Amino acid sequence: MGHDAFAHHALGSAALLIISALHLRPDQTVAELVGTSSVSRATTYRTLKRLADHGLVQRIGETWTLAPRALEGFGIRLPDDAGNGHTLAQGWADIAEQHGTWGIAARRKARHTAERAAYQQALDRFAEHRSRAVVLVRDGRQVLVPLPRRDEIPPTWHAPDGRVLDPVTGRPAADWRVTTDGRLILITPADQRSYDELAAAHAEALSEWESVA
Image (tube, rainbow, N blue to C red):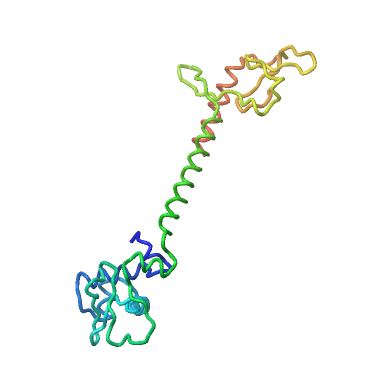
C-alpha cells in the first residue's frame, strides 16, 4: 500500500484491493469482485480498465484474472491491444514514474518527520517557559503554588523575596506583593495573613473552582 504506484494519482488504493482479491481467487466477474474486494461497482470498472491498460489484468469472457507477473508489476500485451497506445507496466517503479508519483512516499515521510520535529521543538520551548512551583503546607495539606510570573511586571519592580520595589525610591513597598499569577496585590493592614498564606489560599480556591467546573 505504501508503494508510490498505488498513490492517489497513480493506480490508487482500489487497484491494490482488486489485485489482492484476484490473487486470492482468480477468474472473478465484476459482481464477484465488488464483494471480494469491498470496492464499489463504479470504482471496480474504472480500476479494472486502468489495470488492463497496463496489462496487469486480462478479461476472459465475463471474468477477470491477473497477468502472469502482475504481482511484480509487469504487464502483458492482450490480444485486442494492437494499436491502442497502452503502455505495458515494467515494474511498480515504472508505473509510478509514468503517473508522476515516484518519490511521493519519501517526500511525505520527510515532511511528516520535519513536522514532528518542529512540533517537538515547540513543546520543548513551551516546557522551558513553564514556571516551577513551590509546595506550601497548610492545615496539614500540601498546596502546589506556582512561582510568580515575572513577565507580567517590570523586572525593576520585582524583589527577590516576592516583594515589590517602589519604582521611585527603589526600596521594597511594605503593602505590595506579587501574586501567583504575576500581578500585583495590595495587602491592607486589615488583612493579617502573610503573603505565603494568601498564595496558598489563592491556589486552593483555584483548585476548588476547577474541580467544580
